[in-house]
Amino acid sequence: MVSQIRELHENGVNYRHMAVLYRAHYVTRPVEEALLKEKIPYHIYSGVPFFGRAEIKDALSYLRMTVSQDDLSFRRIVNLPKRNIGRRRMAFLEEYAAKNSCTLYHALKQTLDDDIFRGTKAQQFVDLIESFSTGHEDERISDLFSAILDESGYETMLRTEGSQERLDNLAELKQSILEYETTCGEEATAAHYLAHVALFTNSDAKDTSDKVKLMTVHAAKGLEFPYVLLCGMNEGVFPSRKIKDMSGMEEERRLAFVAMTRAENGLYLSGAEGRNFDGSPRYPSRFVLDIGDEHLEYAKKPSDTLITAARSHIAYSERCLPENQKHTQFS
Image (cartoon, rainbow, N blue to C red; front, top):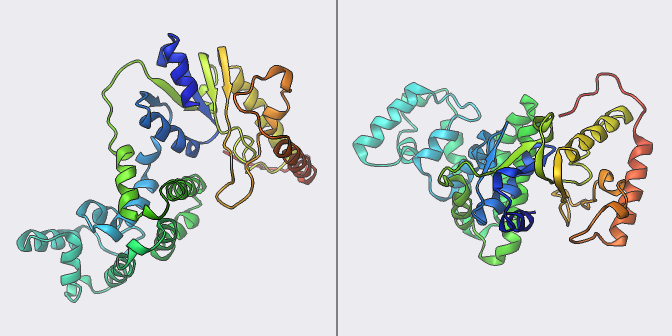
């Protein structure tokens, strides 16, 4: 997809005349990484950049605490989930840290026995960080990351809140870590990965009006663009895995039609290869397969074996969907 953006731009198309559309916000993570790597300017409409989202910052702060115990990460997650460490206790730690020229985390370790922390979960927090910060260099980043989010209670907190979109974003972050491990092999460490993502979290490219537009399909309704790049065209992404009945699937199909008809001059469809985080195959979307090869020009055509397996998967899933289910909701 990025190579297509680059090619269009080299052929005289302004970045602002291109729009990258997607079904769900979490899809933007690999898109943003690729655009940033290639120094292609972009702007996200109706959303927050992936690495700027609260749950991503929280999760990376937990990982960062295993490596450096910096004050910024400490402030962000010491009371998330709630550990009864509010403003008064933070003020106490700040004063201690200033007097003793130490980090806030070190201040907490040194003052755990103070009466001010009675009735809090300060000890549990310190135990958590200590247990993960020892020997983290020898652990796979993905294992370390999943374990600390689980044992800290952060992921459970999101599930309790019913924050499915935020959980989807965390799953995408885990996918990012797995991809990084695959690329770097044995050299991959938590410290190296954090340095890698810092390129994205601190990316304040100079402002320019000529930027690629990134937005959800919903946000694109009523708009048109000279060139549209519709990404994430995989089963479980578009159509969404949250679809519960055939009525919902037809609504997804109408939404896909809306997305494709936003393009005035050129439409580019892309999907991910390989496997999902849970190990299941990444099948091309039924909305692409239904178009017909005579209307498509492939940059890289999926194998016949994958297409056959995808059609079987789609046929089975459609047989399992009821005609209509009242109060079906998806996003």
